[in-house]
Amino acid sequence: MNRKRIVQALALAFAGVALLAAGYVVGTSRGAATNRVPMVASASTSAPPDKAGPQTGRKVLYWRDPMVPNQHFDKPGKSPFMDMQLQPVYADEGSGSAGIRIDAGLQQNLGIRYASVHRRDTAEGFDAVGTTQFDESQADVVQSRVTGYIDRLYASAPMQRIAKGAPIASLFVPDWLAAQEEYLALERGGMDNGLLQASRARMRAMSIPDSVIASLERTGTAQTHIVLTSPETGVVSELNVRDGAMVTQGQTLAKVAGLSKLWLVVEIPEALALDAQPGMGVDAIFSGDPTRHFTGRIREILPGISTTSRTLQARLEIDNADGRLTPGMLMRVRVSGAHAVSRLLVPSEAVITTGKRSIVIVRNGDGRLQPAEVTIGRDVGNETEVLGGLNDGDTVVASGQFLIDSDASLKSILPRLENASTSGASAPAAVPTAVPTAVPAAAAPQTYETTGKVEQVTPNDITFSHQPVPALGWPAMTMSFDKPAPTAFAGVKVGDTVHFVFKPSGDGYQLTKVEPAGGAK
Image 1 (cartoon, rainbow, N blue to C red):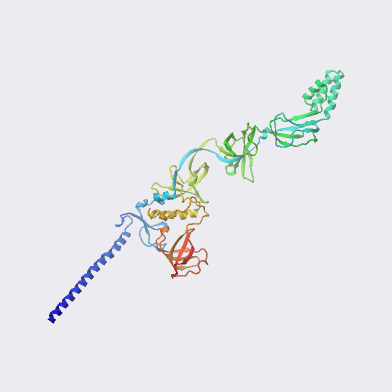
Image 2: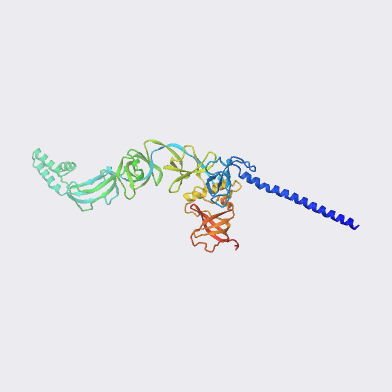
């Protein structure tokens, strides 16, 4: 019995060993099958760029480092710039064309609006400002032809309005008395007509008016006063005498400027001085009443550039028959050329001026957005002339939250839009939607944060092995970040695990905050 039990125990032991061996073999074969999966993936990754991978079925054009997108590689592998793997670029992402692709939902969130570049015939002209002045060609002077005294002054002060024929001053002329008495004595003595004609000639030589001589012959009474009147309806622009003052022969008592016509003096910027020509049409609008228009043509270009305003003055006449305009009024002026000129125009809001260059965002035929440098000319209303860089029919971004006015911000925002487009419509947060329209260059740049381990510390930068940064589309990698100052973050040491915040700065990224991550080292 004992031998039989021993044999049964041995059989059971052998069966257990066999089962264990079978389990080991099965486990090993499954492990080998599992290990073969990444090998297949590796093989697909290393496939030539003109073949599609077995997992995605998409054609790979080239590989690149997302941090250096302009550098292309024909094989996968580790980036020579960063401690990360190269990323594939597929053919269905735009056939290798330049620019970035943004999905429709993201475009709506950004408020992107498009406009077409078009060619239009516009008048060769420019905008300027002008002021009204007295028309000096219509000004009249009131002079005394005799020596006398101001007996009465009717015009009391300069800039007084006066009508035509209204009195200005009354003169007492004592020298007239002797010549008139002599004429009356010859007439009473019955002298011949020759002597009377000689006496009349003498009175005319003394500037006695014919009206006074006729009154002398009719009434027989000498006159020693004369009233000087206004020759024109207008304004007494100058008044050079006062009551009781003595005046001499040829002295100007007053100056009267007419108001029926005024001069409009247009201030033309020095840069447009060569374009201004006599005969160009002018449409002026009174700043106080935009509904009133005054038209005319430039009569003459005044010589000389103002040293204070750096402008050239052009002069023309405008009608003021109703007398509502006065000198000194400000006018908005549009000077039009004689001939229309064909211009390539783009909305002015689509042009980003960085100070060194002008840029527009162009939409390519495949829907990608690409910055293009342009040469701009004059502004025509709400549009700007394009001298180079665009063609008739091109589509440009007219407004959007990424239209910003600094070159540094432009370099920063375009990679973020590109990363957002490659991450798909499921991750719209890749582009910060808090960027306001037309962000000024002085606005604070976007900041990002992550956690990493300190690998190296120098006076200029700190190198981290950091976790992914979803906002920028970065995977986990090792990268250096600039310090704001050599003495900044003095407590950070190699091996520390920290939480840090950084922002775009020039061609790199600058740290703004570094703090321990939960006290871990």
